[in-house]
Image 1 (cartoon, rainbow, N blue to C red):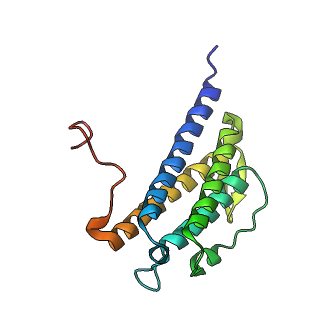
Image 2 (image 1 turned 90 degrees about the horizontal axis):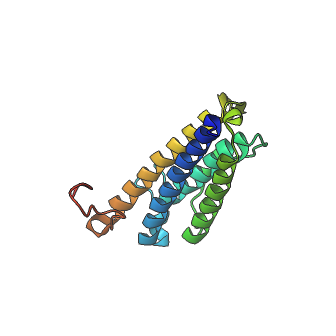
Length: 172
């Protein structure tokens, strides 16, 4: 028997989890090309480094999905994500972010159609679990592209793309 609510919740979980994992893979691809100094480089003092963005993404996903969607208390210190100047090794940053994504995927996969519509108050905003997840995933992917841009800015023509079209259908 077909259960539309279960199917919709599962499709939502698969899509949002894939977006988080794909974004994490792009960040890891960038980290592999950067040295420790480059990870903490800021274009200007008022802009963020790749490392700051990774700390920020970890904080956001933890606040909005791991704790927020799950209905747990949160102790995020958002200003510290941007104030940090390192040096936290890039391997440690990657491990922390990856662990947070694993936790977020577990929370997302545990949602039902009913729980996705539950109300939450996160970071001073009234929202639903579904909206919290969607907005956090979109936020994650936006900063992921910022990390790609910062990496390309530093490496110039030395940047290695993670995807190169191989066929006309793919855009070659």
